Image 1 (cartoon, rainbow over the protein chains, first blue to last red):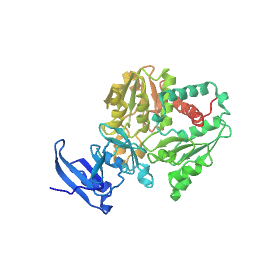
Image 2: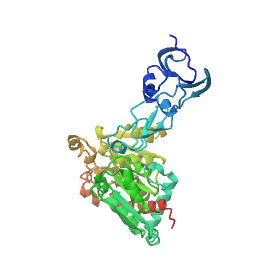
Image 3: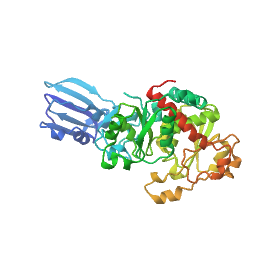
Image 4: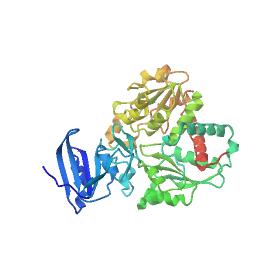
Length: 140
Length: 306
């Protein structure tokens, strides 16, 4: 399968197979007026299968969101058809307004204008806890 | 930015020990501290009812020569008009020097601290934290046992929703040679995350049992708790579990002679009134200690040295 190379933009590589649509939604890529290629289940020597996102427009990415969804993603910045930067992600220590607390007793549920802040409490198990009530996030 | 006490982990072990030392000095030399907070105002904002905590904060501030303002229920504040916690706190911070707040929603004091440049003390936020009760418990254990290490402590009752238990386990996990025994019905066991993060990560051993009678003879400290009606969504569950453990003089026959029985109070029926006469009953001393440690805390957060 051939996908045209992009000229100026971003390639998100090494996405865990099946996660590309989640990233597409979290980064609001549907709102962009440019070509976006979603490649699912591409062959990978390292991962077996992987997803890739190619975005044909330079844009500021929220690396915290990406790192939270999948810290193994590689972010390639493309300028004039060449890769000029390769960023490795890591689990962010703090997430602001990426996920919401599901504890019905948490103040952020009754006062939804508050920033939803989560802090990384266990990097090995990828556990984030609400900064307000310490409830663990659903996601692992 | 002001220094707050939202969670007991906000304070280092050294800071807690300093607070205990100041509280013990206050107990010995109350006159020395009687004007320490002259012209300072404490706001006690209680969005949910409380007897001990609110009155002990107010008594603490008055004993330091300061004054007190505030409210004792959400219905007598602008919360009833839909005001956010942040706006209420912002307003009060224009009048007072320090705030002690209790709120039924978990994390409300953390939210409040984002809007405030005066110190905030969490006086209880739902089932989450109650750090000044923990300080009270630590002062009581220190006064009864002479130190904060080298004993076996049993926690009995509602260990699932009991915020005082979670905070005290966390605080005691910093000290050495403490054996933890958790006594509860299956449904009210200590949450896994408390065990994982406070004990397992640090390699601290603990045992869990459903039998108070079996655990009692080995304990140096027994921390009793109430099964709290307000933490249950389902009244049937509350009724089924509320009488799980009742401490009586008969059960205490096999306990150590120097056992200290603590309870954050209020009690319902989990400690029989007859136990109050037993010299091992420490919970009324604990109430008194609550005032002294809060005096020490107010001084610390206001940066006042005596």
